[in-house]
Amino acid sequence: MPSFAANLTMLFTEVPFTERFARAADAGFRGVEYLFPYAWPAAELKARLDEHGLTQVLFNLPPGDWDAGERGIACLPDRVEEFRAGVATAIEYARVLDCPRLNCLAGLKPVDLNEDLAWQTLVSNVSWAAARLEEAGLTLCLEAINSRVDMPGFVLDTSGKVLALIEEVDGDNVRLQYDLYHMQIMEGDLIRSMECLLPWIGHIQFADNPGRHEPGTGEINFSNVFAAIDRMGYQGWVSAEYRPSAATADSLQWFEGKR
Image (cartoon, rainbow, N blue to C red):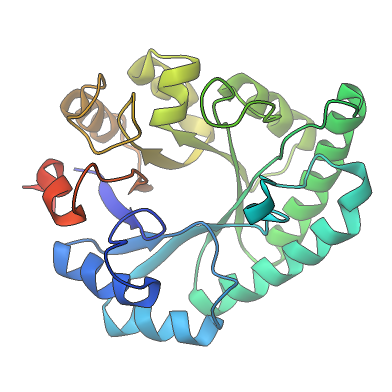
C-alpha cells in the first residue's frame, strides 16, 4: 500500500497543534504535513517529529495574508520581493525539519491584473524558487486547486496548467502536487489521469468529494484509487488532507489495514 501521511492542519484538531503529532503517531501514521509551520519555532516542531518518530513530508511556502483570504502570492507582480523572502524562510524551516519538498501556492488573480502578466510573474517566481530549492537539495511542488468550489480565481486550477508551467520553468526539481479532491471536481477520471501524469507527480493528497471529508463519505472509490496508486509504482507519500465529518479517530476507518 502507499505510504500515508496525516495533514495536521485538518486532522486531530480536537487538540492544540503541537499535540497532534502524538495523535498522528498513535493512529499509525509515520509521516505528517501541514499547511504552514511559520507560527512555531522550527526547532520545536523538529523535536515533536523526533519524539514521535515522524517524517515531515511537505509544507507550503508562505502564502501572503492567509487570514485575510490570500492564497499564495506567486502570481502577483507587486509582491515579488515578499515571495522571494518567503522562499528563503521556507528553505530554512525545511533544513531544520528535514523536509524534502515544499509546495508553492500560485495565488488568486485579482480581476484587474492582466492574465498574461500574472502568468509571466508566476513563471519567473517559480523559476527563481526552483533554482533556490535545487541548491538546497529540495523539490518544489505546484498544486492545482479547484476554482469551482474552494478557490474561485486560483491561477492553477487544472493539472494541464501545472504541466504547462513545469514545461516553461524547465527545472529538474519541479513536480506536480496531485490532490484527488480538487482534481475530482475539475477533471475526474482520476486513475487514468494519475497514470498519465505519474512522471511529474511529486506528492499526492486526498479527500472525498463532495464535502472534503474522509474516504467513504462521497463519490470517490478510494479502494480502487489506492490500489491503482500502488500498482503504478508511485514511491512518494499520500497525505490525508480532509476535514473529518466527526471526531478524527472516527474518520480513520479507511486507514484500517494500511498502517
